[in-house]
Structures are given as C-alpha cells and as structure tokens.
Length: 249
Image (cartoon, rainbow, N blue to C red; front, side, top):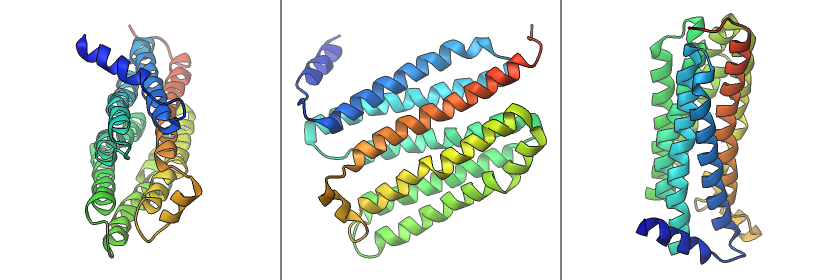
C-alpha cells in the first residue's frame, strides 16, 4: 500500500510539459489494459488459440510492468532507461516470435522454427544492447549494429520468404491473413528500433537529437503499437477461426 501511495504521489509531481514521462505512463496503462482484455477473452476461443491469446497477454503485461519502472527511472534521473528497455525487449520480442510458431502449428510448424526465431531475436537484442550501451565509441556501435541487423534480416527473410511463409500459405484462411499482417509489423513496425539505435549512438544519426526528436517517445509509441497490435492480430485470427468452426466441448 505504501509503495502504491508513493507511486501515485510521484505521478502527481510529473511536470505538465514532460511529454516523455507522459508517454511512459500512457504506454504502461495501454498495455496493462490490453493484457486484461487478452486474459479475460481467452476462454472465448477454441483450445488451439488459447495459448496464442495467453502469450499476447503476457507480452503486454511484461511490457506494462517494465514501462512502470521506466517511467519511474525517467522521473528520477531524466535519462533514457536503456537497460530496462532492453530487459523488456529480451523478454517480449522472443514471445512475439513464438506467436508465429503458435499460429502456424495448424500447418505443421515444428519447434525448430520457434527456437530458431527465438535465438535470432535474442542475438539481435543482445548485440544491439552491446552496441548502444556498452561499446559506444569507435567502431563498436557499427560492428554490434551490423550483427544485430543481420539477425533481424534473417528473421525477416524467414517469415516473408522462408519456412514460415510456406507454412502460412499451406494453412491459408485466417492464419495466412494473420501471418501477413504480423510480417508487416516486423518489417515496418520493428524498423523504429534500428533507427533509434542509430539516432542514439555517436557518429551515426545522433544529430537527430538536435532537432528536438526524443527517441524515447518514438520507442514508447512504437512499442505500444507493435505489442498491442501483435496481440490484436492474433485475436482477430482467433475470432475468425473460431467463428468458422464448431465450438469445442
């Protein structure tokens, strides 16, 4: 109770013009609301979709918790909570990759696909963290960024043209439609992260900060759109699939 009261008091001290802190708070509330929605809707679907909806809820719930701590970090230090953000990503992004496997199980997707996507996403994030927060001078950001980018593009290839794409085509219907939409999230929605990486590392596009562009705001909005959007796509596929099949006992 005391922690809750302190948190509420801290919010009341937020400057009215602190738009960065505001996006942290709104992002937290939006993803917490999405989690409640996904968790409460699980039993409305066939068993084969419940795990997918559960994972959607876990993604937004984990993000909501981290956003609460990131907002507090920002309010206390006025600095980008890079470490907390990467901890959030290293937990939620692999789960987003798991969603591809879960919706493609109907077409015979194997666990090897899931583990490959998880591995690539972890490589992408760990190397990105080293380049943005550890080796931040000289050629460090470029080399670590290159490694992160390679892992990202392998994921993009796999879901757009590789094994995942073939399975989605074989499944057809709501699964294929959902897969295509999730692919666009990865290709377009996830593009904000390498852009933010370049804007936040010396010698790349760090001059963007001089234009009044705060990457935390872009990250916060992008995170909410990507994570909630991912879940809503899966939810839509579950609705379409369940409405076209007899209810399970």
